[in-house]
Structure formats: structure tokens, C-alpha cells
Image 1 (cartoon, rainbow, N blue to C red):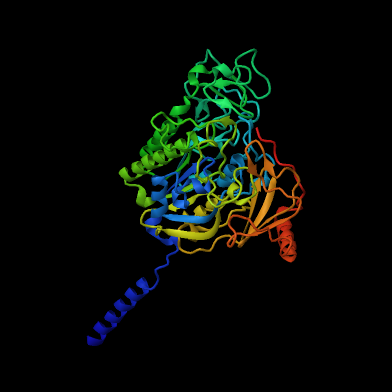
Image 2: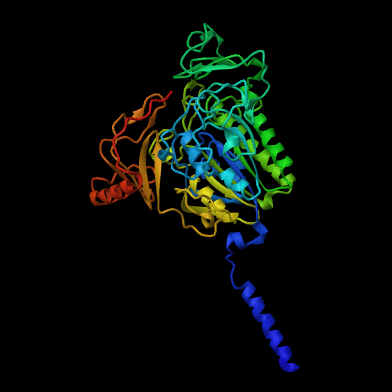
Length: 519
């Protein structure tokens, strides 16, 4: 009997040792995180230095900072592109945008650029029982190119994996200036049908170009067509008066929709893509935020966006969802001050550095174009910290596939499974990444960034941002030279040649390109 007792005692001890022998769990084997909710909070034109957690000391973003301090703040987190539509395409599909010739800045009348049979983040999550929703900016095209805005518009978000969609079609500065819910314009009076044209005006209706006396915001370049709420837009619109949005209410409007989505679907696994419109132009803060930043409307809408994020997080907490929700916060591209309107963004910027220590900005191949705030947060699962892992937004699709044990796609994905890095289990990120800016591409590889020779102006004078164009190659060690001051291409020609060959193996032959004309 004694030997039998000793045997079972030894067996019990071995069981305890085995069960405690490893602190490193395979995320998809951990039953406590089975089918977590997933939320993407995606801002528009928010720069690396616009978030105080990333070193900004002029503009304060306490609610984004709380996510950063309570989660994982990535110092090498990238959008795939320096402009919005391509980045959003990559975020949802896991595919480089330069593989799709239509993944470029789109007008409000552009057809849907995601194939309705293509794997997307929401479609993959749907396959595992998730309810999926989008609230906010879309800008990936709608319909097939001949949209009748007075009927249900299709295909759109609902045809690429979203169960529910509540969106603005393109951008706040483009027509149509209406909200669509599941493809239907909200509040449309059938007796006042909408007509949209991006080339020709409808008769002699007022425009920003011809009627400056009607404007509450003066246009600088491109934004001089139909006037809505005193703001001149890109493109011409007629009708739909009762359906038009009120710009200063947009942030609140989307916040309430995002909060309601969470409350309605809290009892089932859900995915919410909360695509905020700030701080994209036109910057129209609600009056309660006007003047709060001291930096003009651009700073004010960032303060407003930060408040919205705080209110949204409060809802998740009140509904008891934070311990079962993975939150990813990032931006579609880097910052820009004057992007089409005179709104004091330049004059009142003061000592604030929207790009932080980075060079360039929106539209640029320099780092500020694509290196953006990137935070993952999951209360009780992700340990607070800072990661230097090289990660990209298009890595989220294959990483989430592993998390929920889904087959991501039978198609080739450019995104990589970096789940362990996103959860803070290690700092093993990508080995290389191709970044894109208005048709031009560059290669980030380890510590290095190679920008091939490109024709075209060095600076876009409309937005006063360096584009990264040079007739000679550029090579930077980003670990030692984050501000890209010292071009090492001439002194390290062998490194340039090696990287160029590796780059062309991924991208194909690199040809000089003129930068895209900005509207």
C-alpha cells in the first residue's frame, strides 16, 4: 500500500511540474482567448508625432496614450502606403496595394476595388462565427462604376465580408456628402434624388471657385467644387439635401454608431472596423473642441478623436468586454498640414512636430509617410510594453487567422503571421517590407531602407512635403539615423546593389515614376 501511495504522489508531482513547466502558450491553444472580439481603430492622416505616447510634447492624447501604456506600442509599425485607399486595401486583404492597379486615391464615384470573392479580414472572421461591422470612412469604391445613389449601392462593404456597414463613401472632402447604411443613403428624400459628377457641374449651382462669399472655409488647392455646409468639396453634387451630413457632428455620429454596435453584439464574437475620419481635411471639430489644442482645427480634431477613443473604450469597459477584446489602433498614413484648405494648420502648428523625428509625411517614401502609431491592446493578455518588431497592417489578417484557427486564404498573401509579436510574446517581426507612395515603392529590410532613383520633384509644393524622389539611390540605416539625414548609398554601393536585386525579386523591375498629381 505504501508503494502505491508513493507512486500516486510521484504521479501527482509530475503532473504539476508538466503543467507549470512552460509560461509560453500557443495563443490558439489557450482556451481563455478562444474567439476574442477584434476591434480596429483606424485614424486618417495621424502622424507618428501626433500621439504624445510617441514623444510628442505639445499635443496631448491621453486616451490613445492609455492604450499605449496598457498595451504594446510598436516603434516600427507601418501602414503599407503613404496614402489612404492603398493602406485600407492592404489592411483588409493582407495584400500589397501595388499588386492592384486600382488601389490608389479614389474619387467618390470609383467602383469597388476589392474583388467580392477575395479573402478579407471580415470575411475570414465571418467564417468562424463572428458578426462583422464597419463604422466610418470606407474609400475603397462602391458599385461597378455607374452608381445610382438613390437605390441600394452594391457591391460594397457588405459584399466583402461585413454584416453591417455604416459609412461615408470616400472622404469628408469628396462628394457624395451623405452616410450609407448597408448600401442605402440614410435619410434620402426620393423627391430630391442625388446626382454626382466629378467632371461637370450641374447648371450654375454655386461652387467654391465661383462663389467664395458662400464659404466658411477657404480652399487652397483642388477643393473648389460643390459647397456643402460652407465647405467646398472635390466633385459636384446635386440633390439629397435632407441626407447631407453635418460636418461638425461627424465624430459624435460615428462614435454613437460604434458604441451601439458593441452593445448590440456583445453576446457574440464580433469584429468592428472603427474607421475614424480625423484628422483628414476638412478639419471640422465640434464647437466644444474648437480651440482646445491651441494648434488650430487640425490639433482640435485630434483632441476630439482622442476623446472619442476614450468614450469608446469606456463603453467596452462598461460592457465587460476588455478582457476578451483585441484592439489594434493605427493610422492609414502619415501627417500633412495643408492638404487642400486654409485652416491654420500651418500657421498655428507652432513647435508641434506631427511626424516626430521622422522625415517626410503623407505622400512620401520617407519614413513619415508610412511609419505610423501602431498599438495592440488586450487587457490581461498583452503585457504592457514597447516593441521594436517590424510589423505592417497587412500582417493582421494572417495573424488573426492563427489566433482564431481559421484558414486565411487559398490565395497568396503578402501579410505574415506575426501573432506572437502582436501579442508581445516576442519581437520577431518581418525581415523586409515594401512600402508605397503614389505609385513609387521602396524596400525596408532589417535596419535599412532603400529608395530607388525616381524622377519628379523632390518636394510637392502644394502640401510642402518631401516626396523622397531623387535621381540617385538613397540608403539609410534607420536604427542609427531615424531622421534619414545621412544617405549612405554612395559609400555602400555593394549594399545598394544587393538590396536592389532583392527588391526587384519581390517587386519586379523598378522604373522611374512621376509622383501622382495631388488634388
